[in-house]
Image 1 (spheres, rainbow, N blue to C red):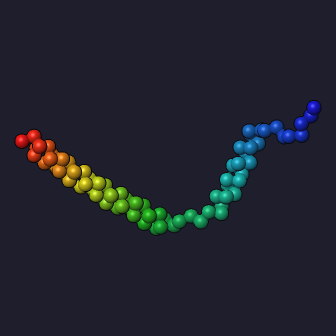
Image 2: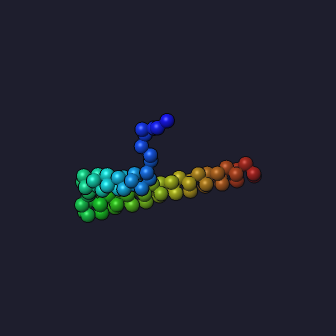
Image 3: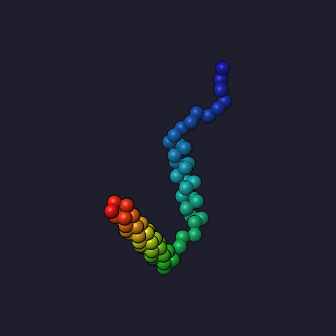
Length: 74
């Protein structure tokens, strides 16, 4: 019995994958250097704000728990 299905060739598949990926990369609209810098700055600032928020929240909860332990142990 002969099968008409093609045998899978990983090398041919990989080469075709690379060709298709390169073709898709030419269709991408890349951001300018100014846009990239602006977006990176937004990410850094928001990360610092969120870290500050959670750091402050952690500090408040720690102080509250310390007060609770002090009150209950007296």
